[in-house]
Image (tube, rainbow, N blue to C red; front, side, top):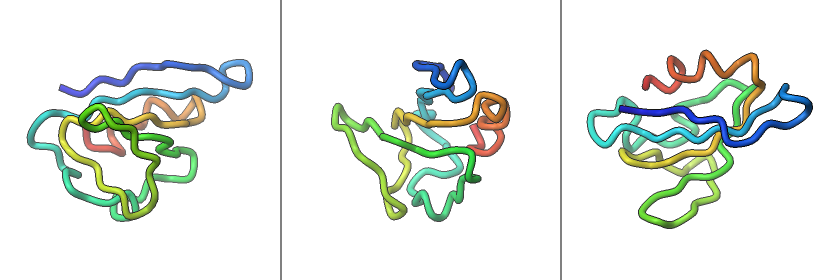
Length: 87
């Protein structure tokens, strides 16, 4: 089961940094690159924590089951994130 947790708020709450735990198995985007996922512009993956290592992602970085990802987003767009990431 995935979880979205707000960890930081910026610009008087208009922008948030959120931590999302990707499910351990059967995730639709497992092994897909960020370019293949194609997040809308109001979202930016700023880091991925995998096996106790921090990854600064690029377009060719993959998402894997069990990853913890940090996403910067507009606060009013947060509610769409689960659907966009197929969580």
